[in-house]
Amino acid sequence: MSAASPIWPAQLDHLRLESDDPKALADFYARALGFEVHGFGEDFLLQAPGRRQIIGKGERGGRTYHAYRLQNERQLAEVRAYVQAQGLATEPSPAKAFRDDAVAVRDPDGWVSVFGLPKPGLPSPKAANAIPARAYAARLQHVVVATPNLAPMIEFYEKGLGFVASDYVLLDEDDQSTKRVAFWRTDPEHHCFAAFQASHSKPDHHAYETSGWMDFRDWGDHLANLEIPVVWGPGRHGPGNNLFFMFEDPNGDRIELSAELELLPREMGPRTWPHTERTVNLWGAGWIRQ
Image 1: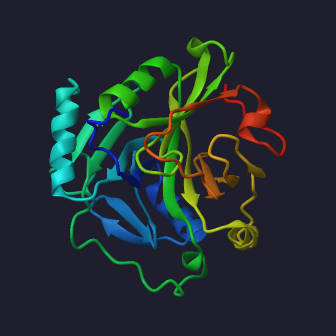
Image 2 (image 1 turned 120 degrees about the vertical axis):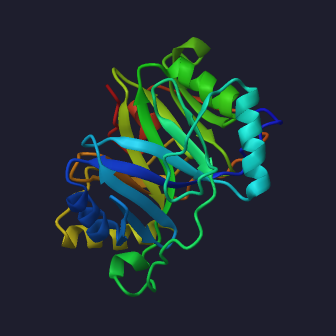
């Protein structure tokens, strides 16, 4: 990240997930992740301690935008000035849970990132003991996409927005032109956003950070009671060094539960990893994107 970029610190606040049946998808997230569901115009606002999502009508498995929460009005004004100084075109914000003055930009694959402040008066989730799953730690933490255009994506996020590169995965660690994965951070957590080289642009997964290994037991038992199977893991990623397991929503989108995500100082430069199964899962079978 350029030292001039004001995006640090920003945290992933919510995504807008699209579905041809948004009510059914909202009901799944309520059951699986303990969200409380509220009508929100034509959409649904889902909230629980540490996590928020918007679900609405659209392409099955689509994501309308990724919304990052800033700290205050001064940072918002500085972010707007910075991205415009980089020559990036801003758009009207589509994030209805953010104030109307949020900054929205579109990356080379068409993904919209929104930087802003939450609207006042959003519904407050009930006490954490109201629904068992709501009592489990799972803070919305990062989002990942697949892309056929990794080099332009790296240019956009690092130079255009000023995200910090944490790790790259390369086919040949001696050749920087062979990058296949990039992980970026906007605060000390290893990544809030990542992109994997693949045959076409598509969502990859989004993740919730838990408080530790014992949370995996509780979440695993909860999902088992709902007959929602784990599709990958448990394991430990190389980049980020975090524990993980994944399951799928009705759209086929993968949801990751994570723990022990690595913390890195802002000034630390990116590391490199080989493009192998062991990089994506130090414990066993990997998920190599196609």
